[in-house]
Length: 570
Image 1: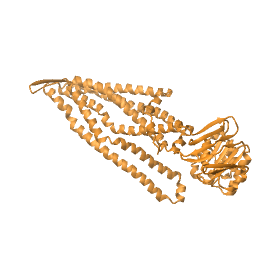
Image 2 (image 1 turned 120 degrees about the horizontal axis):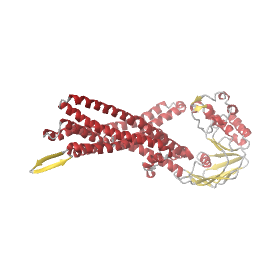
Image 3 (image 1 turned 90 degrees about the horizontal axis):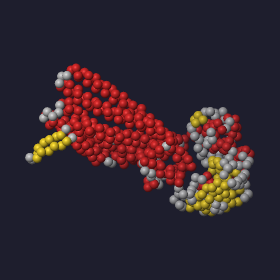
Image 4 (image 1 turned 30 degrees about the vertical axis):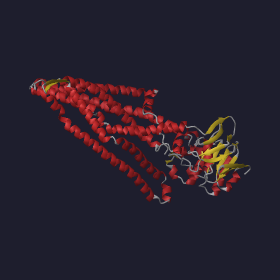
């Protein structure tokens, strides 16, 4: 696979386009609401911390009248915190994901499907599984970006707030060592920061290999899904080959890669969690131990110890967000890298220099050359003399396998940039290409027949007439039936359906690349006769090997390795 990593955009080029777009106002509104709830939640947490201390002091002092009032306030604070968490953690958060993912998916789909970019990516093998990167990686990237970004903001707000709270509660720790007097104001704050930093360091040292493992996870999972999809879509061909055992081996081999990567992630995650949790457990008594000297000296009450412990744990919990989110961050890096690779592949396919230039002219003919066709690596396929395809002409292109017949059609279609030369197309001409195996999308038979046009652009009567003309009368009454027609129809039926499309669309130039190879000679000749009868003004260009088809063409273009010769009439 060709690497495009050197041309990858920065991750901000994936994040920023939505937030700069005109459609982002709903996202900004939801983000503002999310931040408002976040600040409100921190305020409620400070209030709850104060109430916890008052509850303990009221219990110690047996102040029963005041205790019930404080307990009621603490209950209200708890219920309010639950409501804020619900609104913040689900409603506004899911709304943000919905808005951003919808926009980003449309953005990638537009970029992927325009200008033949999807074909360029597959042709050059720039990245693997582009479809799965759009359908799955975008969702994961959006979710992780929002959770990590909002989590970081929450950390900053909570850290600043509870640093001030804990600083005020800590007071000054005074002690003598070696005859010298020491006084450390806000000492609990320093302890909390040091403790959190140690936890992050332990997690990083134990889990840094997870970034590469999660990156590989996305690849092996996508490969496993793709091989399963291949088996499903090509079930009949595999069955004819009796290839079930081979496909079983291929699928299980691919799943072995999934299992191996999964096991490596499990082991590395367990090591990281064990190291982190042991560190946290050992240090869990730190706030109580650190506040004991001032409590035993009478400087603070038991309620103050409760508040100090609560504020310490809140501050540490906030700072330890980065430790707990380490695995999420590694996944985000891996998914972000896959989307960056996809963006780079899209840009490469869209903007790559074209050796074979395509231009639109005001004439009525397609003109090429002289033109040199080459492979993506630069190796020459064929060098062709100038070729002119006039309106209403019938051309038969022949040559040995590998001589460049199909590549010539790709160059005329504008999807093959490798080589040198120029292709001129009439500006107003409609071109249609029928390959050996045409694409038939899932859906109604009418939609499949009218592709790439819309079903409503053609009447049912016209569709039925086209199907009867290509000897598919049994399908004429099934236009509204939905099915996987690519798997339902035989190879010959698929080719006849494709020719029926041409009868409906009536292109100015019709190119058939072995488009009747699955038909018997009688049916093939009958369909060519139908094309000539119903599309008298269309230029017909056929790539075929059968000599019988010469009767339906008045010109022959013979490809001979690195050269070509044209003859007329056939």
